[in-house]
Image (cartoon, rainbow, N blue to C red; front, top):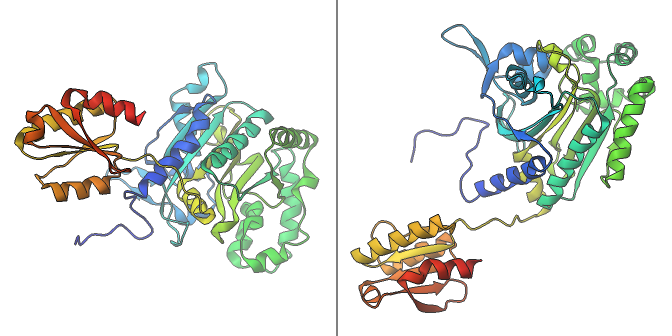
Length: 420
C-alpha cells in the first residue's frame, strides 16, 4: 500500500471508469471538429496578471480560488482556473487573428484548478472541453456554439438538461443598469463582503446562491429593461436562430455567470439531477477581453463544458455509454514455440487495426483463460505444441463458447472478417 494519496479535492481516473471520461471528451469534441474548430493546447500555468485582468480581480476565482505561486526567477504564475483567457492569449501571441480568416475557431481539452471546498461535482482539479470563436460579432456564432453543445449532450444520450439564456448588455447600456442595480443593492441587508461587490461588480451579487440573499433580490432592476436597441436586436436574433434549430432554452434574467469578461449573450447548461452543483457547462460572449489583456478589438464567444459534471449527469439519468472493448482478441500460448508464434500474430493483428492482447508471465491454461475472460475479448486464440505441429490454432468464441481449429496463416484474415 502506497504511503501517498491524491491531494485533497482531486481524483485519479482509473480503468474501466476512465473510458467514460474519454467517451465524453470525444462526444463533445466531435461536433466542433465537424464545424471548423481546430485543436489548441495551452500551458497548465500562466501569468497571474492574465487571469487578474481577464477573469476579473473581484471574482472569487481570482481572490479566493486561484493557485498562485512565485518561481525561483521571481515570475508570478498561476495554475489555470479556466480556459478562455489562456486560449485568447495564445491566439494573440500566435497572430492567428492576422491570418485573415475570422473568426478563429478553436477547441481545447484539459485540466483546470481552483482552490475551493471539495464536494461531489466540485473538485480542485477538474476537466473541461471548451470552444472559442474569436474575432467576429455575429448572433449566428453565439447560436452555433449553443447548438453544438446541445448536439454533443444529446449524442451522449443526455435528455434532462436545460439551457438558460440571458443578455448582459454592452458598454453602452450596462453602465446605466449597473448604477440602478447598485442603488437597489445598497438598500439591502447584506454582509460586508457582498457589499464590497456592489462597488466592484454588482451583477455578481445577482449570482449569489444563498437563499437569504436571493430573497432580498426580489424586485431588483431587470437588465432586460435597460438593454439598448442594438443589444435587444442582437439577443433576439440569437433566440430566433436557436429556436429555428429546434433547441429549447429558458430565459433567465438573473444569469450573469462568474467571470467579469462576459458581454451580451450568456448561457448555462444545468442538470437538475446534480443537486446544488447543477451547472454542467456554460459560456457567453466576451467582446472586450482581447483589449483587457493587451490585444486589439476582437469580439468573441465561447463555452466550456465540464467533463466531470457531464459524467455525473449521465449517471443521474442512468445513461450507459456504449464503450468499445479494450481487447477484441486475446492470445494464450502454451509453450515457448507457441509464445513466439502467437506474439508475432498479435503484432500482426494490431497492425491490421484489431485490438489484441497477450497472456504475459508464462501462466498456465487455466490462469490465462481467466485473464482472457477479464479482458472482455470476443475471441481467444489458444495454441500448444501439438496445434502448431498441425499448423493450426484453436479459436474460441467467448460469447457462444464454440471452438474450432484454424490455420496459423489465416488467423489475421479470419479474425478481421469475424470482427467486421
